[in-house]
Length: 195
Image (cartoon, rainbow, N blue to C red; front, side):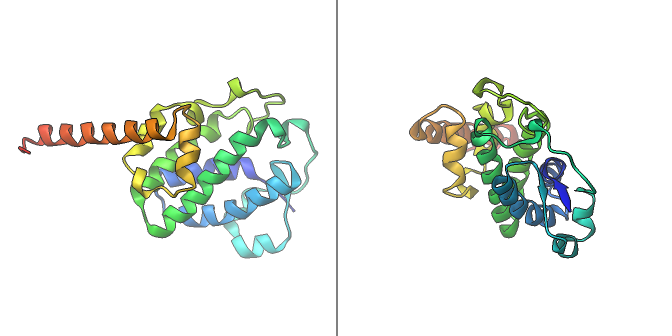
């Protein structure tokens, strides 16, 4: 049995972004599937029949009856950084979902959703260079987008987010802290409260 991981990545990001009820089940299915992507070197992977029994109808929509290997669906060394970012994001979603950390789950889901829809790697880019990687990964503004929930992020996720911004860890921490403080003061001003 073959499973195409790309639509599962997209679907997981979309559901996590909106914190839907099936987010946890999607993340639980995607997490081990990405291990298989890494092992097999393709985004369409061979999985045992037991997967259908374990994940049921949820996974059935991503199964393929047959598949012909195409170079554009390979996981290449050029994709290593972007794949590692997706992998870490999915593990983080799994952890955050377990904590029912809605805000952080939605923000990481938003980034994963955007990345999965705009990724050259996921959508058949035969050749990809560092300049090709998506805005969702490289955009420093997305560090601030997640920054409100910075303290909810795991020690594994923070360096991954920082690395994608070309900031030093100290610069990133300071940027997040300053932005969060400005946002807090703006909310106070808008609400008419005095601090």
